[in-house]
Amino acid sequence: MSTLIIATKNAGKANDFKLLLEPKGFEIKTLLDYPEIPEVEETGYTFEENARLKAETISALLKAPVLADDSGIMIDALDGQPGVFSARFAGEPKSDAANNAKVLAMLGELEGGSRQAHFHCTLVLAHPDKESLVVEGKVTGEIAQFPKGDNGFGYDPLFFYPELNKTFGELTDQEKNTFSHRSEALKQLDNLIDDWFN
Ligand SMILES: O=P(O)(O)OP(=O)(O)OP(=O)(O)OC[C@H]1O[C@@H](n2cnc3c(O)ncnc32)[C@H](O)[C@@H]1O
Ligand SMILES: [Mg+2]
Image (tube, rainbow, N blue to C red; front, side, top):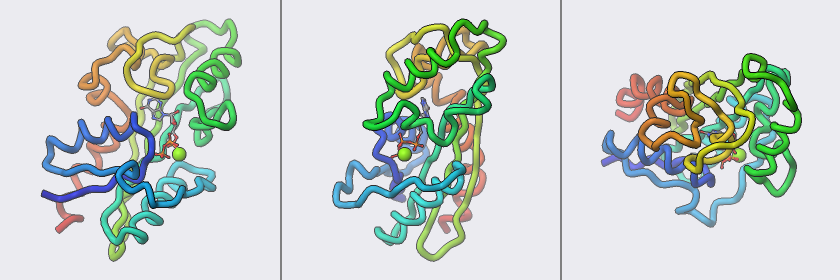
């Protein structure tokens, strides 16, 4: 079985990756299993720059294959904000509740059609001796008028997905991992990963 280290400390993402990759035969570890690894500063201005920073830095340190995810939510009415700054949109310390409250306050009374948004995910798979692989995925929806559902993490309770008439916070793990930006990106990676590993 191949071990794959995910360069994340986000328990919600870690859960998504375990559900998506363990059935494919990978043993998944995350930075929660390597507390000695220092924080990688996300100094990039694009998802790809940040995902590369996380994957390539940790892969060099651990001398092992490492997958990193940089993701976020982009809201049309806010010119794509919070985007790359999604994790800390409402400042430090990072708080999902404060981020969601800030988004709702900024959108105010805007109606459904004007609340379009999408989640974006860039994945970078790095190896000390190989060119990194880069893939991406997205999913489109709307920002709900108020948070709904306790599942998932981050902006999931605000992200209304019209196809299922539910927010991502109301989806089961399996539903989220069928339709999410992360699963879209992993489908792209799936076509490439076997060749890359061998
Ligand atoms: O960098 P790592 O350690 O992976 O964890 P992070 O939470 O800081 O992750 P990012 O830098 O990629 O920031 C992504 C933010 O975008 C939001 N986000 C990304 N994917 C999401 C998802 O599937 N559901 C809800 N919110 C999501 C959430 O607020 C994340 O904190
Ligand atoms: Mg981060």
